[in-house]
Length: 493
Image (cartoon, rainbow, N blue to C red; front, side, top):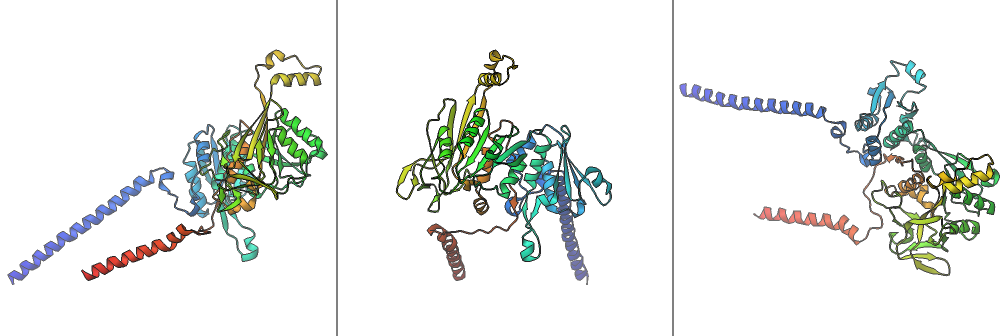
């Protein structure tokens, strides 16, 4: 009996020790977990919330980071919404974005508890009011501008869902707007069968604080004084001699002109061709093909070489843009010594200008910029001729900076064609385009950021070759055979 009691006590003591050890380990693990959570709660928002979303919608671009890093004014984000019911994607992005700088203050106002705040600030619920302290400027961002829905899907499916997330682009554009006083005006010409900007292009121009307005040069007879950039988007018919003269005079006095060539035939535009030639860009006959830099053997689908000219490659990560059915140019001597020209988009040495009769090999420019300088002395002389009361400033004119006119020419409108930019979303067509726009102005930085798709992405391969077939079929087969051999050896052992 004593032996049984002794054995029971020994077993009970051993179990008690093991139980105490288990309880101690559980308490220790819980304490560590609490400690880790307390430490994690004090980490910066950017560290605490890792972006594991599809298409990385919470990733903040280098453009935004640079803007926030150099921000020297106080900005307030006032969110008029019930915080608890606000979409988590918007809340998370706001917290990550504002954590990058101490200059932005984030406030939440519940419109249910404080309905008068909406009237006082002139906003609706589910809206972010962005205010610049120094400039006093304000702008608003609706939640629907951040989580963009496809309205057309309602007519096909009976419901709507968010298809794009534009937090980065909307917030950065708003901050840039309320901290600067400068806004650019873009006049887009009409009367020559010009194309219209896609919604994506118009949105990017708006994000860069640029407004658009149409202009018919023949009807107006002049270029408005508030024109910061005159845009000729793929004119199909030729310019008149009066329009060419007007454009030359505008550029000579510091104006900025941007021309994209139409993908249609260029045989009937001698005046336009003459304008380009005057600035050192001679159009090649036919369409341009590239035997080396093309899309999967489609020689007219060209990936041009991009030159790091005038900051045009800033913000580009892959330097990959696609042009389709491009008309090429060769760089020649301009008509005046005050004009200089540089190409920023080129084919490889295996480029061809292809017509029905000929195929001419060479390197062709697909995008170029011509600049024309006019000394301040010349400007003063012209002013004196027009105004008899103008003061004589010839002695000081030599010390003043030179004015610079600028002509930018793209040989393919496909760079910003919606069918191209929507189909090849990983390319940087629109980024390069906005760089070519902002490079016209010394006081302007390209802060236009594209919205990110919320569509589910699939890993697919088109036009699979031998390597693709090997990866899709061969690699899994090798792994399967290897696993079977290992299993067979272990079974035999």
